[in-house]
Length: 202
Image 1 (cartoon, one colour):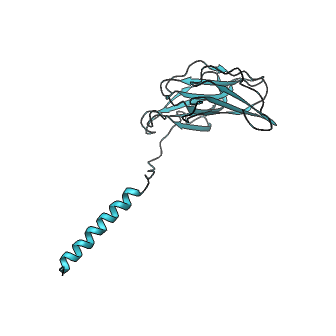
Image 2 (cartoon, rainbow, N blue to C red):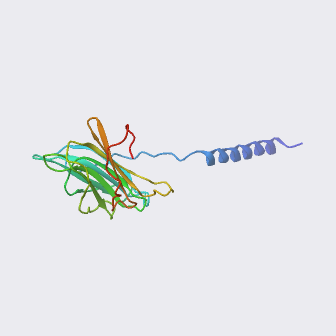
């Protein structure tokens, strides 16, 4: 018959092993750190910030926001290479309103937006190949110049045939339009930009 000490030791050992098994099954927890200033200018309002995480480098975050300047509205991008602890800011060429940001599976960042300046809207997509530090020349999507709202990027991240395909959707009062680019977001497919049928985007 075991002694009291042996019995208590056995109970302690079982409790330890059971606790380890439970801990191994628990999902990872999100840790919320201190607030960090992302915008670079406290004198001007930043509106509608969108942030995405680089799938090729989770420490690389890229955001885009409208910044209300005294005479215009521009899009600025913010980028972090250390998981959000520090940020840099740079304007996105020719972008004014309604930015949206997404990443290709390769780690290339994309921003969609409405073109800066007055007049009928043009929908632009701009690429960054260095984690949001610099931005290339914008690509204007082949859409009729009219009044659009919130062009939104979606990237196919599945393992299927469409992997890396970029979709841009923009609203227009009672209709929407969609553009589909080839994987990598460089060349559009000829069947691209057209109004949806019965609200289903192509």
